[in-house]
Structures are given as C-alpha cells and as structure tokens.
Image (cartoon, rainbow, N blue to C red; front, side):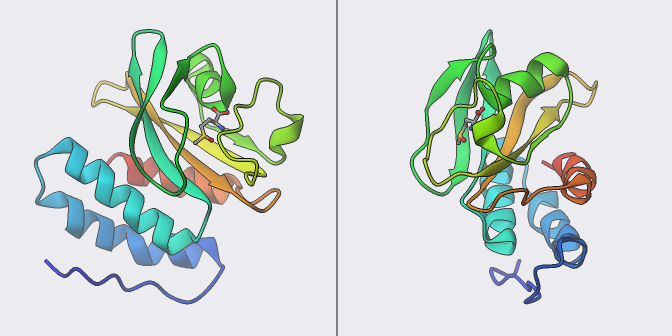
Length: 157
Ligand code: SME
C-alpha cells in the first residue's frame, strides 16, 4: 500500500473525485476494520477537497455521535432532531446547505463554517447507520456533483 496520495492540483471537483475514487478503493479495499476505513476515507477527502471539516457522525438511538474526522474539534453528540445532520437522518436523504446561516437549526460547531453537505451513510440493506458531514469556509461550496460522487464513494466505507 502506498501512503502517498496522487491528488491533482485543481478546484474542479469532478476531476478530484475521479482521481481519488480508485485511491480510496485501493486504500479501503484491503481493510476489514470499519473505523480504520472511516478514518482514512475522511483523510483522503479532506486532503483532496481542502475544506474546513470532514467527518462521520454515527447514529446511536436518537443521537448522532462523533466518529472519525479531520479538522477542528467538533460537537461530540446531538439529537437527530437538531442540525443539518439530524435533518439528513430524518428526511433519509442528502442535504446541501448553501448558506448555513439560513438553515433553521444549523449546529455551528465552528463559526468558520459557511456551507455544508450531509450524506446518509447506509448499511448494505440501505438502513442509515450515520452521516458523512463536510463543512466549507466558502458559501455554496457543494453541489449535486459532490452529492453524486460522495453517495457512491460512501458505499466503499
Ligand atoms: N453543522 C452540523 C453539525 C456538525 S459540525 O458542523 C461538524 C449540523 O448542523 O448538523
């Protein structure tokens, strides 16, 4: 296994996702431990996208509990009735927030966060077992391009 990532110098998300997809598969494919896969998945995405925060929250009853992540210290747990992450669980779908200040109930773990995407993380039967949360310091930093690639990439975790 190579410890070096090959990440193109570009802000074109399609180019970035196409470059990191095979690297994520190679890195995670051999690893049987889920936490190790989650941790390296966050590290690759965070490094490639150059964003503020990349991490998992795991569903435990009615709460979302912090999992592996990259970036500043974050809220360690909150209710599924709160935040963008909670909304993604309750609505059973990916949520893209262009401006977090305009999302009622957004949980500001960092005042630097301006936009966000939250993707449900599912088991093989499709049941939600957590979420992947990406935060950016730029407004409107996430689009359906991120959604499409991240929903596919999450299946490798
Ligand atoms: N902003 C999220 C909370 C998690 S942190 O951003 C890392 C939310 O509103 O659900």
